[in-house]
View 1 (spheres, helix red, strand yellow):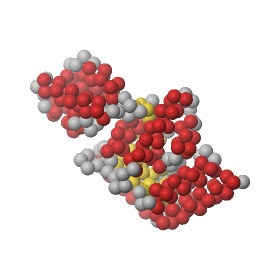
View 2 (view 1 turned 135 degrees about the vertical axis):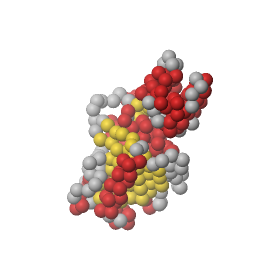
View 3 (view 1 turned 180 degrees about the vertical axis):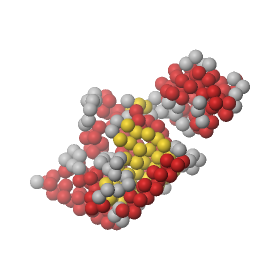
Length: 275
């Protein structure tokens, strides 16, 4: 398991890093060379905008000769439990002004209902204890609160038709989930497009992609597979992901036709549940 950090503690971590760097008489550029980290990344950590990982902390301790201080400080950032590979992406998600996601198999986390999320999080391997399950579910549902503000982030969701057709939790759960997506779309909070099976292969078919934009930071791309995920900040890679998303979006149904399909599938699930 990994952890979503506490913003206040992250700010304190950054302030302590800046203090110790200045005591050592180093600029951010000089520290970046000693720690083999980018100056920008160090600046973001000092400003409390980025959560350092264990490798960052070890590099800072070596560069500043702080005897493991920054490694030992990491647990103070701990908050809610998330998958290890998603921890960094979750931090970016809370700062994003625009999010565009593609999902090939499951409804994206910020759109999941409690019932749907409960099935997803209680399944899989290894089995989870009741405490782990509750922590994961609480965190998953809390992520949806970024939609409480009508204006930001702007959310576009691109769903493979398989997301609609795979009966996660059974017909009743799926009916509720799909109607929740429709409600969010009808309220103009999210924009939804579906890539129908008839498209065949498309540029995003291989896995989940989340593109994020920010007020002060450059855009990033997060890609995810089985038990793995990676945040890409390299501009050339981010741009490739954006272009792939645009290509797939060009093959998708319109927003209106996508909602019509989702409503139809939801009705089919409702009839099945009643039977």
